[in-house]
Length: 335
Image (cartoon, rainbow, N blue to C red):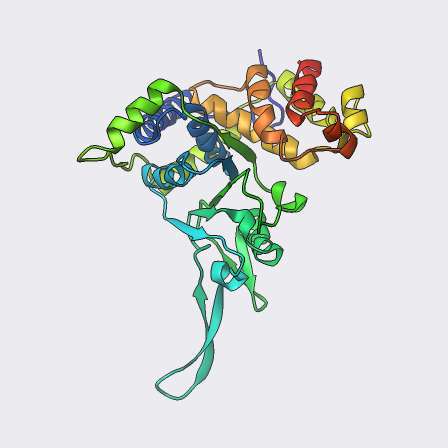
């Protein structure tokens, strides 16, 4: 029997609530799958990210439906979604909002805050690495604290609040790599690949006809918040907790027992990685209708949770060692 990892976990979610949420999530999965073809793993990871209350970085080539996925996710989950196209001339005020000086009919002048697009429930930051570091950093407080500060005044963001950012892995000219502090605020890095032949055929037929399928709402913001609360109430066994800690700590060259990590990793995952993995495995269990996560959830979610929280040294890259190989070795050692 799994032992709860903390007293808070022991306030167990009722089975009926888990089954009800799992049924709604199943409808959401199928609804998104009717619009996004051949990307079921990507869909599941995006749903897990939102269920865990986090943000996701979607990396893939143009034309792989990253933008459409985010738009469809917002529609199906019933969230207020907005899209910002990041460009080199984008300013922080274009995202957060700004204060304007107004004069009332009585002649009294004062500042009024006009909200920017960040005041939504699902923000799509399209090609986030095209904006300057100053503009990228405007999202740091919003992603971590779910509020923004303008002219010394704190403005809370709507709940739930999620950022799904996209990035093109090939076209690097005129881009600004995301700093480590911002990368760490993304719960997952989701790599989007090409669909298989059958899925691409179905996509071709469905999207070039007289009518295209449209996404329909399945959940709403209140139901999503309830599901996120349920995620945090799922009990986690001691073996799963130990596996998460062993995995994350093995990626730090200072404390790792793996030669592959000590010799090749420049910096490893911090405590936020363990927190992200804990929430993600709970969300995956709920998505699949299980009462608690397992070691299999840890091994399945370790790559998307860790790959953007680690970096290889120059010598490792010169020797052709990949981060995927290092993470595979860490998973094998922690299993």
